Image (cartoon, rainbow, N blue to C red; front, side, top):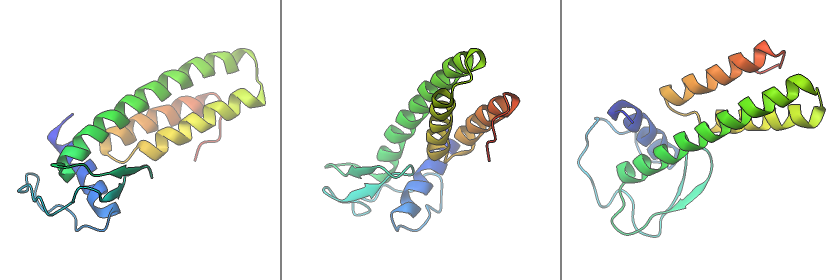
Length: 132
């Protein structure tokens, strides 16, 4: 994880929850920014309850790593399903592939994750999928 990726993710997290964009890449940690018990909406729409001693950057770092791992799992699932789909053009397999691609799109909120989504899109287009 690069500092720029973490900064981008933290900004998305802050703005999505009504905070001003983080103005600098290493802002002071402000304990009043989020309070224990506050609920934050993560960039992909999931809810997270803030625990004691957590800051936007701490939460962003943890959730960014988690989201990138989820993208990796989804990418592998898409690859496996593409192999199955190539042999059997079943609609349910196509739907499973499209659902996973949509999940990746939902998680793709930083430049690096958007690049990974673009690679999935390109590989699906090669198979004839209509991906927006």
